[in-house]
Structure formats: C-alpha cells, structure tokens
Length: 266
Image 1 (cartoon, rainbow, N blue to C red):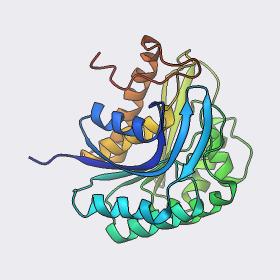
Image 2: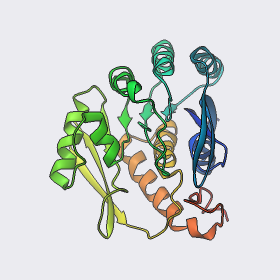
Image 3: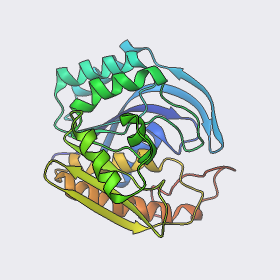
C-alpha cells in the first residue's frame, strides 16, 4: 500500500486557522499524509498579524531536503514565502528534487489585510517560482498584483488575466473568486487548452480565515492522490465550499474565524 504524501512550504499561523496549520489539517481531512517546511513564524490570530519572523533561507532549504530525501512526495504546496532569499532557496530545492506537482498560492496579504510578502519579493516570486508551478491559485487582487494591473471585474477580464499569467511560465491558473460579488463565488481554471468556470453559492459568513491556504492545499492533496488537475480542482472547490458553509458551527476568536476543515467528521 502506498500512502499519498504532500509537502507544504509555508508560514506558521499561531492561531491555527491558516498557513502550515491549515495546510496540514486539509491534507489530513482529505486522506493525505502531510509534511511541512516552515518559511516564517507569525504572531497571528483571527484579528490580525502582530509579528513575523522569517526562517533563515538555508534552514528552509534544509527542511525541504530532509523531507524529499526520505518521503515519496506526491505534490508540493507553496504558500507564504515571506522574503526573496527564501524564494531562491525554494526554487533551488525544487530544481534538485523535481516534484511531480507544484501548487503555488501567491500569498501576499492575510484575510485581516496584513502584508505577508515583502514588496520587493513579488518580482522574485514571479520569475523563479511561477515557472515551476503546475498551477498557481491567486485570488482576484493577487492576480492583479502579479500583473501590475487593476483587479478584474468581469469574466472576460478574469480569463484575460489568467492567460497573461500563463505566459509567465506556470502550466495552469486557478483564479479564486471569493473577493468578487454576486450570489455565486466563481473560480476560473485557465490552461492552454481551456478556461473553465467553477461556481458555488456565495456563503454569508465572516469566518473565512485560511480559505485560500486550504483551497490550494486541497488541490495539492488531490494531485498527491493521483487525480488530474481538473478533477483535483473540482473536488477542492466542493470541499472548501462545505468547509466555509460549516464555519459558523465553530466559535473561535473575535475576528475572521477559521473554516471547518473537519466538517465531514464532526
């Protein structure tokens, strides 16, 4: 029997709702063994981020090497990278180990509005990590920031931005529509072959902490289990929608509370 394994390379959220903690919960909820390489420690809760300490780049690389040298990693999810030096270290490590699938979530700003990626590191993320990605998973503001353009307002503009992001080297783009408006939250999966709209009812809740981290991790979990990208994205969309719909069953914190990663269990 082979055990599907996914590695998350991301920052730690001390309140447990986003980052490494959300990724590992997602992997576990979806039947995948999770490993981690921590890029930054954050002092964080549901109301905001009060401190960030970046892990030295050589230790980020050492964590990745330790995991790959022992575990059969089926997919990698990259979240908060914090600084340009860590981007260099991650890119070099992935070039060494050549993982089958890489899901890049270009985390720049937390749900609370706090910045999680140094402004000068955005260009490095674009140039060094995006070309390694099987799929990138920006939300609407992140997609616009990667292209240095205004936020897309229509389906045509979103698909157009997806095409331009493809030209930066990634193999597919999943633009998340949670920051949009209307009765439905629609994500767009854009590849060289097609653009597919994935709609789900927009859920009225303020408990959305960790949504982006968890969706990208759910995609990585599907890829680690052998699903093709389109199937992994559809399953991830369905799972995250249910996790958001169940979020109000929790009463955690006084700000943007977490989604319910284990909604199918309790």
